Amino acid sequence: MHGRRTDDSCCFQDSAPVASIITLAYKNSLVYKYGCSDSRFNNLGGTPFLFWQAIGEARRAGIEEFDLGRSGLEDPGLASFKGHLGGAESELNYYRYSTASPKIRRPTGALRLRQIFARMPDAIFTGSDACFTGTWAERLNSCLLV
Image 1 (cartoon, one colour):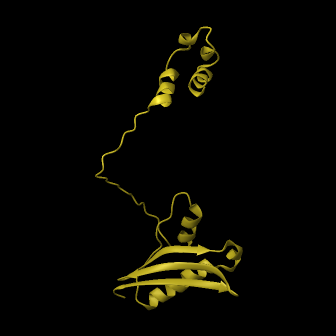
Image 2 (spheres, one colour; image 1 turned 60 degrees about the horizontal axis):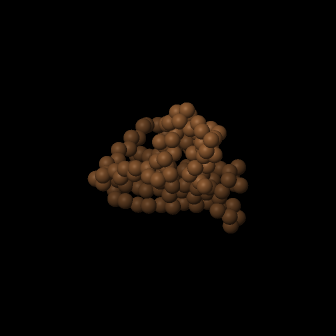
Image 3 (cartoon, one colour; image 1 turned 180 degrees about the horizontal axis):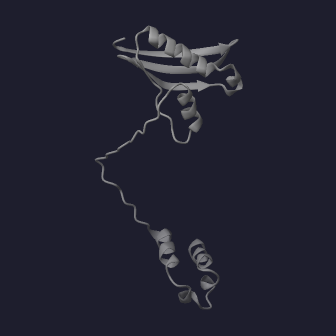
């Protein structure tokens, strides 16, 4: 198969959508891009069914590769599902380059005072003034929030 094609497939139980996938075909590759399912119908196997249908259609069209797409490290279930379909894991590195210079925000006002006071030894705060009683955090908050 040459050229590009997008396909969206959906399966239903009665009139309720169970699962759906979107695939993109380009040259001799089929790429799984997005998918979703209603967890109330997981027992019906809608997503595996749609994958099986996509694989069959791709083979009939002469497509040789099925790219199962990315899986985040925070979603081991998705990676496992793709592994059961024969997917092989590979690392994908992202590099970002920005021409904009980073904006450095310097603390001002009360935030800067908190940072300065946090580094001062407690001995500095001894005295009779109410602002200088208790722990350094209590003293700082009473001075700055009054």
